[in-house]
Amino acid sequence: MINFFNFFKDRLSEIALLTLEHIELTAMAVGLAIIIGVPLGILLTRYKKLSAMVLGIASIIQTIPSLALLGFMVPLFGIGTKPAIVALFLYALLPIVRNTFTGVEGVEPTLIEAGIGMGMTNFQLLYMVELPLALPVIMAGIRTSTVINVGITTLCALIGAGGLGQLIFRGISMVNANMILAGAVPAALLALFLDFLLGQMEKLLSQKN
Image (cartoon, rainbow, N blue to C red; front, side, top):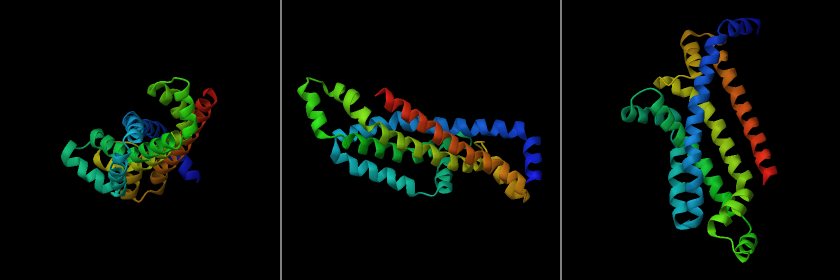
């Protein structure tokens, strides 16, 4: 353990830089998944016949092994951050779309009827009734996507995207346990921190609503 802490201290600047790369990859992929996934989930509540097909396709993507999906991206986008972000985005999409659809669909019909009785438009119903009530479920999907992506991002080092996976794979090739831990421990702590941060954000938004 002492050797690990000494190793960690000696490589602190490199670990910090790789952690920032890890956060950047995760944030871009999850942010893109939120921008596309939340409206798509809402759209599926309006066109329910499409929901089974769209969620089915997203589920199939989730079953593709991470390394295989990253491998599929390389011929299409080359190596580096672009294929990594596309692959991470695809993995992040299902929990966000599914939870948005489930959350909005689960709003009590009586509350919607009450809003219609008050003269609310469809947009007002969505913004003032459905989304606030569905927010905890939507945030749960975002938290799940984020935690999953932090783990999968470590594999993106194999296609030259950077991140903490560089230390892990370098440590494996050199049979260096300290180097493996220097990548794995910050990645695990990052997943826990982001999950906590999003949980606090969820509470804050719920209180405002």
